[in-house]
Length: 365
Image 1 (cartoon, rainbow, N blue to C red):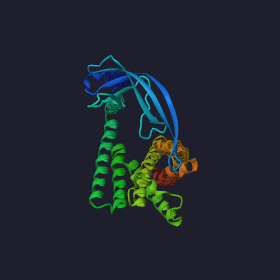
Image 2: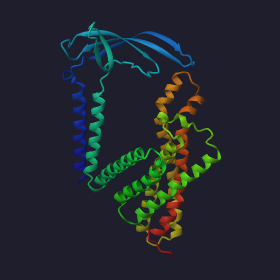
Image 3: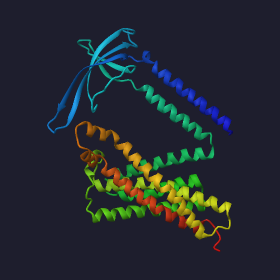
């Protein structure tokens, strides 16, 4: 398919997204629950509060003015009060232009603010995802293989989780280890095909991943897990350490697979362009490529961890906790995962370079 046709498909998809956003923005008449559009917001009161644990917050009272968008009251103006905390842990702050659901008491028939109307955001995300998926599909082989690999990986992952639940969680780490091998093989064979580049990437990914996991287990054992708060993991799922290591294993796998594929692809292209290159030269080239990849890849992982922890960090800080305490309760698990992944990323460079220098069919002279 030509670039022009792809561009037209992208533009049509963008147009559908815009129409979808406009449609959900103006679909209040389809709902039976009362909806208003906020036309004015005024802060009338602010009160600081401190709980028994010395957590600080601020209670804010808003006077919200809005116009009904549906029901028999459509077009009528209404004033309501909204109370929220600055941390917004269990309350909403409302803004001008927002569309909000109302709740009407069956006895007094008085209206109260319920929650923001979010269908515009949801539809925008769905249509945007469908547009990107359509663009992938029209790329034929690559797009279809990517979508197929994601679907099959998801099925394998769900199957492994269901099997773990059926076994009572006793074999979680071995199950995740086997899953990691299957996911790697399936993804790489679909993307690269059954060739030498696949073999290099597969062997390098598995070797670097499990070696990094082994090193991390030994270090954690020697240090007695000092400084790592397993109890801060989501939902306090037990056994803490096993769940943590299973999570780390999958995290390492994704980063290392990306790196080994990049290095092996670059070295394969180098062999095609320079058939006389020697294994030693190929190995040095792989190390040079790896040095350029390590820094950005580790930083990307760290940014992902920071983005994931950002909301809970804000919640801790807004409640008056110190930065040191906040980081210890929200970042130790993520930071440890990043460090272990960085070990795997670093190990993958020489492993991939060595395997490529021996398996891509270069001359030994």
